[in-house]
Length: 349
Picture 1 (cartoon, one colour):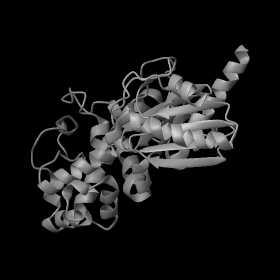
Picture 2 (tube, rainbow, N blue to C red; picture 1 turned 90 degrees about the vertical axis):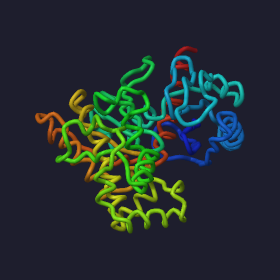
Picture 3 (cartoon, helix red, strand yellow; picture 1 turned 120 degrees about the horizontal axis):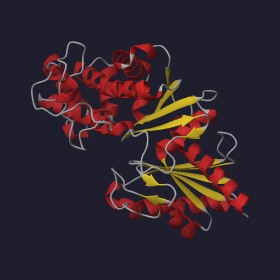
Picture 4 (cartoon, rainbow, N blue to C red; picture 1 turned 180 degrees about the vertical axis):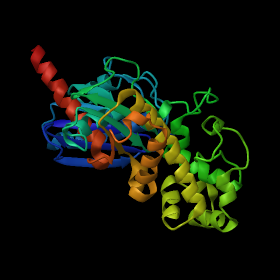
């Protein structure tokens, strides 16, 4: 049996499986306290993994980490959400602490492998996976092999810079279309000044205007009732607005929330269109918490945005579908990494 661990920006998930099928023999989810940093997460892993390993004969551990990693060295490069991970040798720590070999991979790469193997991309030769949650990441699988092995980073669709004026590392697709990006846009919309929406009637440089302070069509379309209603949903505290709350408000017809989600989908759709233009995958699988907003609020406007920006000869030559393995997809992929690593180790014996 193999233990898969997902380390994200807000959650820690562990599961046990045999590496041959998506069923899990056991699973556990824990919330992360970012204030405790990496040290707090390591303590959670030690306790939770130790309990699972008492119940199952775990031969190897796979880890899907939410951030750039050095797979060959088993080392975390850094985390964009939680402090304390920079240059941390996580695979060695797991081996030392839990007593079995461990292999480290990026969470999106792990998820991409899982979805390509026995998820929504099963049977396809080229699969691009996108996760949209606390951050935005990607992974590209061709003929069952993950692209970018041994490179410092690969398929980082969330870190595309949307436009020529996006010349700072912080101005990315992730900053505009992730869960925190959606929440930030909604809060700014309530205040009355956010970025321009990315509609067909927008000026040509609207993608490049993502950080300019000016009154927006989002703010103009939303009346005071929409703004007030959004704050009321957050218990009267604007800082409590989240992407999930924005989605709920949009489903109930709040125009500010609808415009914020539409803008996020257009930014993400632009990024996916660029990726399709370059790689031409047969299928794009989209997962993560934001994707759970569903067909009407997320997938339909996302597909429309991709269609708007994609290279015309590729129009209609791809699918965009929800992830099939749910929020446990990274755990499934991490188990697959562990099973593969165990095979490598046995082959060397």
